[in-house]
Amino acid sequence: MPVDAVRRPWRAAAGLVLVLAAGLAHPQTAPPTPQLQACMACHGPQGNSQISTIPSLAGQPKLFIENQLVLIREGLRDVPAMKGLLDGVKDADIVRMAAWFSEQKPVAAAQGAPSPAQFQRGQALAARGLCGSCHLPDFSGRAQIPRLAGQHEAFLLQSMKQFRDHPGPGRDTIMAASLYGFKDDELADLAHYLAYAK
Image 1 (spheres, rainbow, N blue to C red):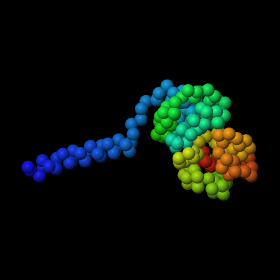
Image 2: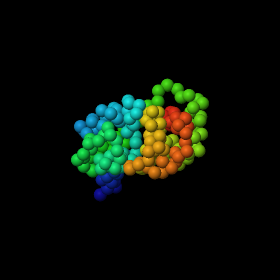
Image 3: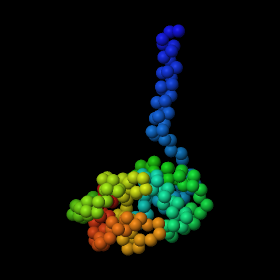
Image 4: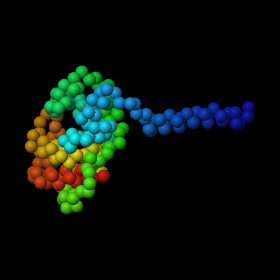
Protein backbone atom coordinates (compact mmCIF):
# COMPACT_ATOMS: atom_id res chain seq x y z
CA MET A 1 0.00 0.00 0.00
CA PRO A 2 1.43 3.43 -0.90
CA VAL A 3 2.64 5.50 2.05
CA ASP A 4 0.39 8.41 1.03
CA ALA A 5 -2.71 6.20 1.27
CA VAL A 6 -1.79 5.37 4.86
CA ARG A 7 -1.21 9.03 5.75
CA ARG A 8 -4.48 10.30 4.25
CA PRO A 9 -6.84 8.98 7.00
CA TRP A 10 -4.51 10.32 9.69
CA ARG A 11 -4.47 13.75 8.05
CA ALA A 12 -8.26 13.75 7.85
CA ALA A 13 -8.54 12.74 11.50
CA ALA A 14 -6.04 15.39 12.55
CA GLY A 15 -8.00 17.99 10.56
CA LEU A 16 -11.24 16.96 12.27
CA VAL A 17 -9.61 17.26 15.70
CA LEU A 18 -8.42 20.78 14.84
CA VAL A 19 -11.90 21.81 13.65
CA LEU A 20 -13.51 20.43 16.81
CA ALA A 21 -10.91 22.12 19.02
CA ALA A 22 -11.52 25.44 17.27
CA GLY A 23 -15.26 25.02 17.84
CA LEU A 24 -14.72 24.40 21.54
CA ALA A 25 -12.36 27.35 21.86
CA HIS A 26 -14.92 29.66 20.19
CA PRO A 27 -18.37 28.28 21.03
CA GLN A 28 -21.22 29.34 18.79
CA THR A 29 -23.57 31.71 20.60
CA ALA A 30 -27.24 30.89 20.10
CA PRO A 31 -29.73 33.71 19.47
CA PRO A 32 -31.26 35.20 22.64
CA THR A 33 -34.20 33.24 24.07
CA PRO A 34 -37.33 34.97 25.43
CA GLN A 35 -35.81 34.64 28.92
CA LEU A 36 -32.64 36.43 27.77
CA GLN A 37 -34.71 39.09 26.01
CA ALA A 38 -36.53 39.71 29.30
CA CYS A 39 -33.18 40.13 31.10
CA MET A 40 -32.00 42.61 28.46
CA ALA A 41 -35.06 44.79 29.02
CA CYS A 42 -33.27 46.06 32.14
CA HIS A 43 -29.67 44.87 31.79
CA GLY A 44 -29.34 46.28 28.27
CA PRO A 45 -28.49 44.98 24.79
CA GLN A 46 -26.35 41.84 25.09
CA GLY A 47 -26.22 42.55 28.81
CA ASN A 48 -24.60 45.99 28.54
CA SER A 49 -26.73 48.12 30.86
CA GLN A 50 -27.97 51.51 29.72
CA ILE A 51 -29.36 52.36 33.18
CA SER A 52 -26.88 53.79 35.67
CA THR A 53 -28.17 51.86 38.70
CA ILE A 54 -28.44 48.47 36.95
CA PRO A 55 -25.33 46.31 36.44
CA SER A 56 -24.05 45.03 33.12
CA LEU A 57 -24.01 41.24 32.80
CA ALA A 58 -21.96 41.07 29.60
CA GLY A 59 -18.59 39.46 30.22
CA GLN A 60 -19.34 38.62 33.84
CA PRO A 61 -17.90 35.27 34.99
CA LYS A 62 -20.39 32.47 34.27
CA LEU A 63 -20.25 31.05 37.79
CA PHE A 64 -20.90 34.47 39.31
CA ILE A 65 -24.05 34.94 37.21
CA GLU A 66 -25.25 31.40 38.00
CA ASN A 67 -24.78 31.92 41.74
CA GLN A 68 -26.59 35.26 41.77
CA LEU A 69 -29.54 33.96 39.74
CA VAL A 70 -29.96 30.98 42.08
CA LEU A 71 -29.71 33.19 45.18
CA ILE A 72 -32.37 35.53 43.75
CA ARG A 73 -34.62 32.68 42.61
CA GLU A 74 -34.46 31.01 46.03
CA GLY A 75 -35.15 34.27 47.87
CA LEU A 76 -31.73 34.25 49.53
CA ARG A 77 -30.86 37.57 47.92
CA ASP A 78 -33.51 40.27 47.85
CA VAL A 79 -33.63 42.27 44.63
CA PRO A 80 -37.10 43.86 44.59
CA ALA A 81 -37.03 44.60 40.85
CA MET A 82 -36.40 40.91 40.12
CA LYS A 83 -38.91 39.44 42.57
CA GLY A 84 -40.82 36.64 40.90
CA LEU A 85 -38.99 36.88 37.57
CA LEU A 86 -37.02 33.70 38.20
CA ASP A 87 -39.84 31.68 39.75
CA GLY A 88 -39.88 28.23 38.18
CA VAL A 89 -36.75 28.81 36.09
CA LYS A 90 -34.86 25.51 35.99
CA ASP A 91 -31.17 25.15 36.87
CA ALA A 92 -30.35 24.14 33.28
CA ASP A 93 -31.92 27.38 32.00
CA ILE A 94 -29.96 29.42 34.54
CA VAL A 95 -26.73 27.75 33.38
CA ARG A 96 -27.59 28.56 29.73
CA MET A 97 -28.46 32.18 30.57
CA ALA A 98 -25.24 32.62 32.54
CA ALA A 99 -23.17 31.10 29.73
CA TRP A 100 -24.74 33.40 27.13
CA PHE A 101 -24.17 36.60 29.11
CA SER A 102 -20.62 35.58 30.05
CA GLU A 103 -19.77 35.21 26.34
CA GLN A 104 -20.98 38.71 25.40
CA LYS A 105 -18.46 41.51 24.91
CA PRO A 106 -18.61 44.03 27.75
CA VAL A 107 -18.84 47.68 26.78
CA ALA A 108 -17.60 50.19 29.36
CA ALA A 109 -20.44 52.26 30.79
CA ALA A 110 -18.28 55.29 31.60
CA GLN A 111 -18.64 58.17 29.14
CA GLY A 112 -16.18 60.96 28.55
CA ALA A 113 -12.88 61.32 30.36
CA PRO A 114 -12.31 60.51 34.02
CA SER A 115 -11.43 63.17 36.56
CA PRO A 116 -7.63 62.75 36.91
CA ALA A 117 -7.59 63.61 40.63
CA GLN A 118 -10.57 61.40 41.49
CA PHE A 119 -9.21 58.56 39.34
CA GLN A 120 -5.86 58.68 41.16
CA ARG A 121 -7.52 58.76 44.57
CA GLY A 122 -9.68 55.79 43.60
CA GLN A 123 -6.68 53.91 42.26
CA ALA A 124 -4.86 54.38 45.57
CA LEU A 125 -7.94 53.22 47.50
CA ALA A 126 -8.26 50.11 45.30
CA ALA A 127 -4.63 49.29 46.07
CA ARG A 128 -5.17 49.92 49.79
CA GLY A 129 -8.27 47.72 49.81
CA LEU A 130 -6.50 44.98 47.80
CA CYS A 131 -9.46 44.92 45.38
CA GLY A 132 -7.32 43.38 42.63
CA SER A 133 -6.39 40.37 44.74
CA CYS A 134 -9.92 38.94 44.38
CA HIS A 135 -11.36 40.79 41.36
CA LEU A 136 -8.02 40.42 39.48
CA PRO A 137 -5.63 43.31 38.72
CA ASP A 138 -7.70 44.40 35.70
CA PHE A 139 -10.95 44.00 37.72
CA SER A 140 -12.36 41.57 35.13
CA GLY A 141 -13.50 39.14 37.85
CA ARG A 142 -13.21 35.37 38.03
CA ALA A 143 -15.25 32.36 39.10
CA GLN A 144 -17.81 33.63 41.67
CA ILE A 145 -16.24 37.11 41.86
CA PRO A 146 -17.77 39.78 39.57
CA ARG A 147 -16.20 42.01 36.96
CA LEU A 148 -16.07 45.60 38.25
CA ALA A 149 -14.23 47.29 35.39
CA GLY A 150 -16.46 49.47 33.27
CA GLN A 151 -19.61 49.10 35.38
CA HIS A 152 -21.78 52.18 35.94
CA GLU A 153 -20.30 54.49 38.54
CA ALA A 154 -23.69 54.98 40.23
CA PHE A 155 -24.24 51.21 40.43
CA LEU A 156 -20.77 50.61 41.89
CA LEU A 157 -21.25 53.31 44.55
CA GLN A 158 -24.72 52.07 45.47
CA SER A 159 -23.49 48.44 45.74
CA MET A 160 -20.48 49.32 47.88
CA LYS A 161 -22.65 51.33 50.27
CA GLN A 162 -25.05 48.38 50.56
CA PHE A 163 -22.17 46.01 51.34
CA ARG A 164 -20.78 48.40 53.94
CA ASP A 165 -24.02 49.51 55.58
CA HIS A 166 -26.54 46.69 55.07
CA PRO A 167 -24.80 43.31 54.96
CA GLY A 168 -27.46 40.64 54.92
CA PRO A 169 -28.67 37.42 53.31
CA GLY A 170 -27.13 36.79 49.91
CA ARG A 171 -24.47 39.44 50.47
CA ASP A 172 -20.77 38.62 50.50
CA THR A 173 -19.48 39.04 54.06
CA ILE A 174 -15.91 39.43 52.76
CA MET A 175 -17.03 42.55 50.88
CA ALA A 176 -18.74 43.94 53.98
CA ALA A 177 -15.50 43.48 55.93
CA SER A 178 -13.35 44.86 53.08
CA LEU A 179 -15.36 48.09 52.88
CA TYR A 180 -15.67 48.60 56.64
CA GLY A 181 -14.37 52.05 57.58
CA PHE A 182 -14.46 53.50 54.05
CA LYS A 183 -16.12 56.93 54.03
CA ASP A 184 -18.74 57.95 51.47
CA ASP A 185 -16.34 60.21 49.57
CA GLU A 186 -13.77 57.40 49.43
CA LEU A 187 -16.36 55.01 48.01
CA ALA A 188 -17.26 57.66 45.42
CA ASP A 189 -13.60 57.90 44.37
CA LEU A 190 -13.31 54.11 44.23
CA ALA A 191 -16.48 53.82 42.13
CA HIS A 192 -15.16 56.50 39.74
CA TYR A 193 -11.86 54.65 39.31
CA LEU A 194 -13.46 51.26 38.71
CA ALA A 195 -15.94 52.69 36.20
CA TYR A 196 -13.00 53.85 34.06
CA ALA A 197 -10.66 50.93 34.82
CA LYS A 198 -9.62 48.85 31.81
